[in-house]
Image (tube, rainbow, N blue to C red; front, side):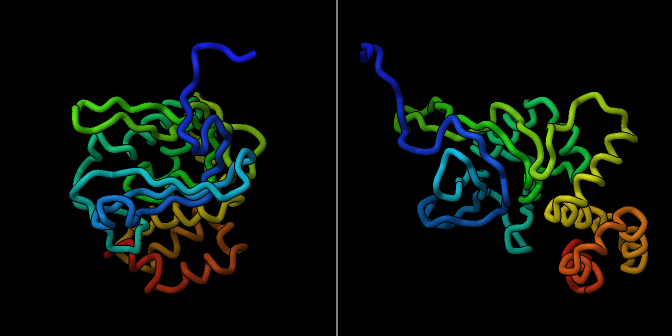
Length: 227
């Protein structure tokens, strides 16, 4: 028997488990005529027969010089943009801050969230402008773990244990390992020192031929990090 209260539906993916396969920055013709960058979430969900693809506004003043891997131009994201709402909601989920801090810990890196699994719901954003209607944004509400792992990483681990878990996680997640190596490259001005650091900190990279070749190519990951 139907009730009298009614329900709100956007007709879009909602109340679903989502694994983030890849995040990056780019443009979409449907937003600001394709003239302003947004953050794209590409993923998968057991509640959807189609791949998940969402974009989140990041505000004005940003540009990318590495084909959407990162953005620069401002110090912080505007609190009114949807990407800010996404990463604040994600960081409010138990277990997420520890993982993000073990990575680059910088929301200006598009793939920072790769491999993370969330239960996500569409939440209504109230407009403070009479000329703009309220809108709905798909946001994380619960952390479900990292792709390839059985359980979420728990909060409160000791720093040493967290670091060890991060390296183990990266070994089973090529995108996470690539992200950590990119972060390492930014800390070194000399290529040989960078290469030594990679071998010392992430020896498992040699098991990934494609990624390891990019590390060995001085004009690839290392050079892009210096740009």
